Image 1 (cartoon, rainbow, N blue to C red):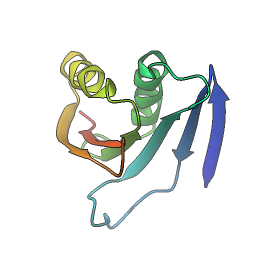
Image 2 (image 1 turned 180 degrees about the vertical axis):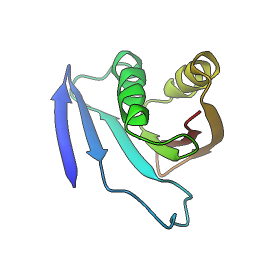
Image 3 (image 1 turned 90 degrees about the horizontal axis):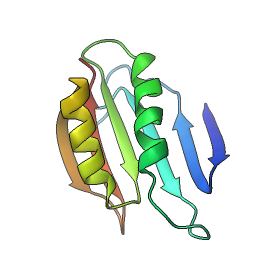
Image 4 (image 1 turned 180 degrees about the horizontal axis):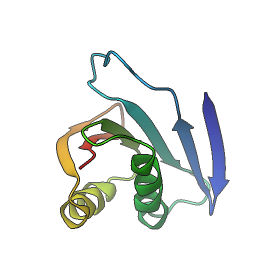
Length: 106
């Protein structure tokens, strides 16, 4: 099931399906967070609260894949993981400007 929300010029796509047997990307849940090119700007102020909400729905040890198109999100997510105690397992470059993060819930 996909939900799309528009808030402050940012498009947030939440994929709420579970990946029971783990896919090749080793995730349990997916959060895609893309900025609206018309408004630009950083996603930071909206991204970390969205991650927190999504992780709250998950069990300890499960992995959330986060996809964003804001390059500044790398530092934001790394810092947020250190502060929150959740584990940043992997960061990788996706297609074009996309970054992918794999966060394991504490």
